[in-house]
Image 1 (cartoon, rainbow, N blue to C red):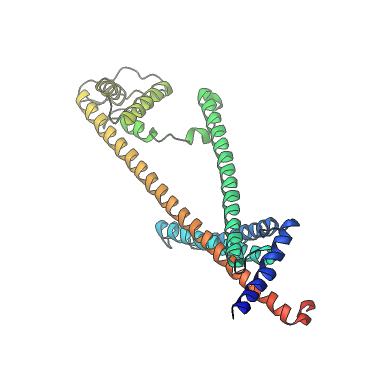
Image 2 (image 1 turned 30 degrees about the vertical axis):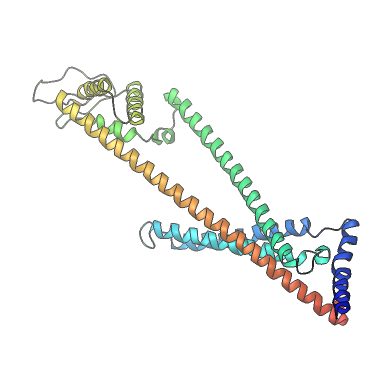
Length: 326
């Protein structure tokens, strides 16, 4: 009985390990880079195909008047992205495992692990390529934005050459600057030229002085500095109240109240924008994690499945040599 067991173990060693060692000595390897690269291309192509289909479906439902809300469309897009990643990398892992040569695995029963590793490498390469392309596109977009901002600044420094499109581009604080210097009720509208002396004084109408570009830029800088510090300084608040009183025709105390009200509104708007940006960032990070997780799991499982089907076909071919040419 012991002799039979020894002979059986020797058969396993000779049939599974020894040929693989000889193959490795001849330069063979159980991992196939060519199969992995083919799987990466298949994964990216299928992912883009599914994303394109989802974009078309989403655009057909999107409407500013009817249809799903923006939140619903955003969640649906995130779920669709997860599905696209899973389908794409499942295809890539399956293709890579089917193309891999299992002749050099070296250990009996180790093919499943190596097929899973092949699928996982397909996922890793695909993620690196997609991240590199996304970073490159973001850098291009940032460069285009910087160029547009430089052009807008140059146009602002040369008002005669400023186009209506450039003048329409407003900074985030422009609305609050406009709110500061709205004419008081009953004040004469501001003119482009320097106003004449007011017709009457006291309760009568007061001519509102126009805000020139230099003063507007100064007020914007003061507001921006105050928002970055959390509140306006006392000197800045008093100075703005004086400007508002002079430019809008409001009494000094009402001008001070307007400055305080606009400051509070600007602070709340900036806080709300920051909260929305943080929420959007967290949402993006979570769904990116989910897409990557499902993509990696799908590539690994599809690699195992592809390897099992490949091995089954090899066994059928060995059992029926006539099937090899069919």
